[in-house]
Every structure is written in structure tokens, then in C-alpha cells.
Image (cartoon, rainbow over all chains, first blue to last red; front, side, top):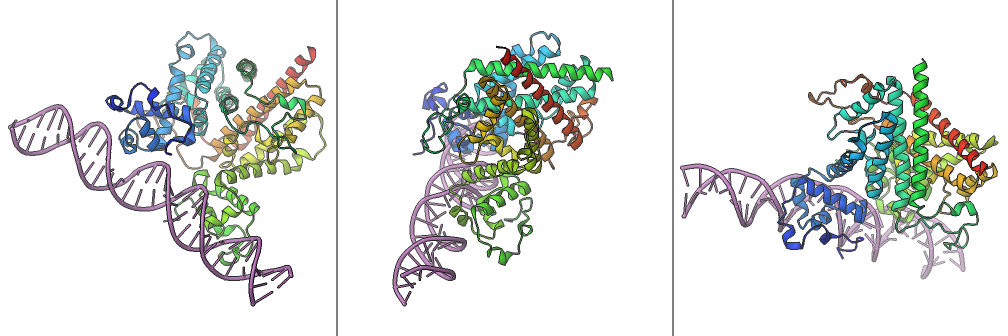
Length: 244
Length: 244
DNA sequence: GGGTACGGCTTACAACGTAAACCCGTAGCC
DNA sequence: GGCTACGGGTTTACGTTGTAAGCCGTACCC
């Protein structure tokens, strides 16, 4: 009865019930477990008591490591962001111009978004301004790096900020949508026919193409194309500003 | 004490406490009140009891008109969508090609998004596929109209769907971000300096430009430019597909 | 008059986030 | 040894949430 949410893989973490509590809790373990839980059961299912249960511990125990649920969710977002940055392909490889950099970063973000489709919308719901460019714990050095990089490569200040915003909103919108389609495993994504109420095919042939999860290849291509177009546009804007 | 949320304008609706209950409740009135409440107090503040209070009625009374809070929120989204469609500039004016149409629609969506910045994120959190192209109560005729329109104007089926998705994700991303900045009336949008913790100016000059609500004109221009670029891209895609 | 339906109220409950108090095994010190 | 301190966890408890169930007054129709 307290077990009717989709089904947490409590045991699949790394241990059996008794020795699980041997591994000492830690902020990191709590945050990781939260992310795992969201991936498995969806955001609305996440509850302090259930999360505790998954860790073999009482809910209140978690509060030794995090001050509130809200901050736990912040931490989860931060963890996703860290995951993007840890991806060496994204940052560590030598940069080959800003376009190359933005492209790699975008793919990095997309990768983690698709890995955690249920958790990604969290990112969008957190405070304004692209979180994946926000460093852990509110300072701005990463954004600075980002912007400074652009300025270095010929962007005016204004153009850099504009580029930053355009880039961010592009990623946000595109990935939110992709993840929503991707993550709708069970649910009302089957559109009902107007009159019959049957889930039968739409009368209009084109509409049918909107159905279904849309093959991974296809959406990757769409992403690629849109990204490319965005970068082209940024280039143009940059050059226009240069002419001033 | 039960009064410490930002401050509902209970009385500002259209009545004083006693005669308020004379106006009979209705689903529409409930939904409208919910939207009003969100605009005034933010999504997290919305509670069935408080909403009831605002309508001069007990919480349970609302359940005669809506089956659940979740469905109430759906209805709010639907109401926003309806608002976009009711905007005669968006739909009723004679169409002058698909680009013009998409442009007017985009501006219409933006207008309601900015009118209800606190409520707009709701739209993004609802089920997949552009809600402003979803008709009331799950059928698809509007999307069909949308897509059929594109096909009529020379798009292949595939290109139309792609355009639909690109367009949708663009609106979603751009407006979510704009609304987030716009709607952060009080809050941690002041970035603290790394060491001092002061809200002083960032060391990097470019970063400072990211601050502040960004003048309405400026963001309008950014929106316009990005939209234009998107439409251009759609045109190109269309023509490419034509060549096949 | 007596239904009967509607619309709102009252009560009640389970589940939530979390404050506060407590409890208990280990570590350090004398 | 015994005493103390304390980190890490449990227990209990409170206020608030969404909502199921039942009650009750008013307005109508017969």
C-alpha cells in the first residue's frame, strides 16, 4: 500500500537491506538517491519518507544532510549540471573556436537531458538564466568564462549577451520538448479521436507523424539542424555587430 | 497568520464579502479565480482552501465544478490558450501566407505569456506537444489546421511536422526564459559577488548586462529577431524538401 | 403539502514537509 | 574503569495539504 508508486529499485542500488545502512549516509548519497528516484518514479513521486525508505533510513535522517526538500531539488539540478561539466568531451577537449565549443556543450546538455528525462524539467523550473552555465553556489565565474570566451572571439559585449540568451532559450525549449515526448512512457500521448473516442489514427495523415516517441535518430537530426541554424545566426549577428 | 501569502486581492474581483456569494459559482469563475490567484500570488501559493477563500466559499465547494486540482490547472492552461486564440489579431485577421500567420501567432502567445508570467510556466509543465496548438479537450483539429495550412502552402508532411516542432520549442524556450526574468520581482536575481557576498557589480563588465529585467523593448527586439531567423530557416527547410 | 435536486458546508482522513525532543553507540578524556 | 560529548539516527508531533463522504438549507415541481 505504501508501495504503489511505479516501483523504486530500492535494492538495485548496490546493497541488501541490512548492510545498506552500513554505508554511511552523506549529502552526496542523498542527492544521488534523489536523482535515481526521480528517474525511476518521476518527480511527483519523490517524497522525503520514500527517499528515506530507499536509503534504508527514516525521513528525518535526511535533514542532517540537506536543509529542506527545496534545497535538495536544487542540489539535484546542480548535480545534473555537474554531470554535464564532468563530461570531458564537453569541456576538456581543446577548443576549436566558439562554434565548436557551443556545439559540444549543447550536445553535452542534451546527453544528460536524455539520460534523465524525468528530472530535466526540474532544471527549467529553477531560477532564471541558464543553470548549466551557473556555477555551483551562485557566483558567476562560469558565465563569465562563457561570455569572456565569446568576447575574446570577436563578439561585442552586447552581442555576447544576446548570444548567451538565444543559446540558452534554444536549449531549454528544444530539450524540454524532446524530453517530454521521450519521457511519456505511459500516458495520454495517444490522442483520442474526436467523435469515437477511440485511439485510432487521426483523419489527417500529417498529424499521425506527430505521434510516437519519434526515433532517436530523427530527433537527433532535428536537434543538430536547429543547433547549426542557431550557430549560423549567432555568427551573422556577430558580424553585424562588428560592422558597427 | 493564514494571511501571510503575498496578498490576494480578494475584494478586487468584483464584489464585497457578503454579496460575493450571491453571484453563483461556476466552473468558469473558479478557473478565472485560479488564474487571478496565480498571477497575484504565484503558483506555489495556490491552495484549494485559499482559492475558496478568495471566492468567499469553502474549499470543498470548488469540487462541484472541477474534479481535482490537477484538472483545475489543466483548465487554467486551457484558459490561457483560449486567450491566445480569442485575440482576433492572431486568428481572425486575413492570413497573408504562413510566415505572417506564424508570426502573428507567436506574438499572440508572447503577449499572454507576458500578461501572466507566473502562470505561463504551467503551460510548459503540461503534457507534451505545444498546448497552444491543442484544442480544448484533447482532439487535434487545431494542430491539423496548423499542419494542413503548412502543407497547403507547399510544405511536405515531414517538413510541416518538423516546422511545427521547431516553432513550438522556440516559443517554449524563449518565452520561458523571458517570463522567468520578467517574473522575478523580488528574489535572488541579484547575483552575489564571489568573495564578499555583496550584491555589488560583477568584476566582468559583460556579465553586468545579464542583470536586471532587461527593458521590454530590448527583449521584444530579441524575440523579433529570433523569430525572424526561425521563419527564415523554416523557409529554407521547406524549399530543400521541395527540391527532393 | 411532499419530494427531489442542487449547492455549499462540515467533518474526517491520509499523506506531506519538517520542528523538536530523544536515544544510543562510539570516542576522547580523566 | 567511569564520565562526558556528540554525531547520526529515530520517535513523536504539528500544521497544511488534497479530497472522500455525508449533511443540510433552499428552490423548485408535482
